[in-house]
Amino acid sequence: MIDLRSDTVTRPTEAMRKAMAQAEVGDDVYEEDPTINRLQELAAELMGKEAALFVPTGTMGNLVALLAHCERGQEILLGDNSHVFYYEVGGASVVGGLAFHTLPNDRFGMIDPAMVAGAIRTPDIHFAQTGLLCLENTHNRAGGTVLSKEQIDQLCQVAHDRDVPVHLDGARIFNAASFLELPVAQLVENLDSVQFCLSKGLAAPAGSIVVGNRNFIAKARKMRKMLGGGMRQAGVLAAAGIIALTEMTQRLEEDHYNARRFAQSLAWIDGFDLDLETVQTNIVAVNLNEKTGTAAEWVAKLKDNGILAGAAGPRRLRFVFHNDVDRAGLEKALSTISNLAS
Image (cartoon, rainbow, N blue to C red; front, side, top):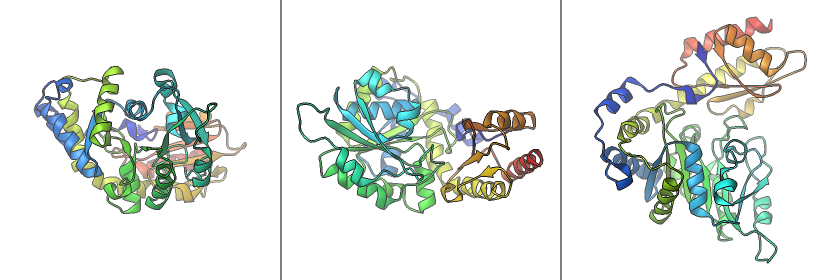
């Protein structure tokens, strides 16, 4: 099977498996796991931040960041198509007593800075206080689109001028940095915190990182413990994370090339509607017309022919390229889809 459902399906590389088998470990709740400590130091250095925290998942990473930034009853500004709002089970509301105030994402995942400025609450007895602006880069539901450094800096300026911190759901931030050909630290320099995943395009079996200043990470560590994310001898996972950051960040351009080649070819198939301007990284979103069939029907047909794809809506297919899909897999997927559509 050629699995194009998500880059979460990647398997650890041989170098990761070897590093995991040989990892030094200790109790991380006591901050005594040497491999986790090395990973956190490396992550903080790469992102240009003071400190970092290893967490089991990106959803937990975003949640501990939101809880560390905000007090109960505060409001989080975020895009109406953001992953935090759509796919993270309302955790900020359930656990943190925080309210979501959504603003429209454009087709590239951007939020209008003027709307952000207008949404930040002024002091008033009737209003929930704005506690945080939350951004996303790359943007999942927009199809892996990238916010530029200029866009991020503009939004940060709007928020910071009003004493509101900014968190980035940067699950695929290295994809964004690769597309922009910028050092990742430069791209995120004005953000107060960032969460990024080791287990997507970077191919580690588990784990995400949250970065920020030391005081923020101390708060986030406590929130992680409260959520049940205090780990013991988890250096076996962190060892794979070190390989992810030192080796796998350099190969993401290949996934972007494959996604672009795939999208350009699908655009020629009748009934497949693609916005090629949004195919910037490793995700390809395809809209189906009424004659072509539903996404569920295509997912089933593709599976029967050795291709796994995702349904991102009743008539929207999603394909994601990653380390386990090579050029041969790309060509086979294209041939299969072309044959099924003819």
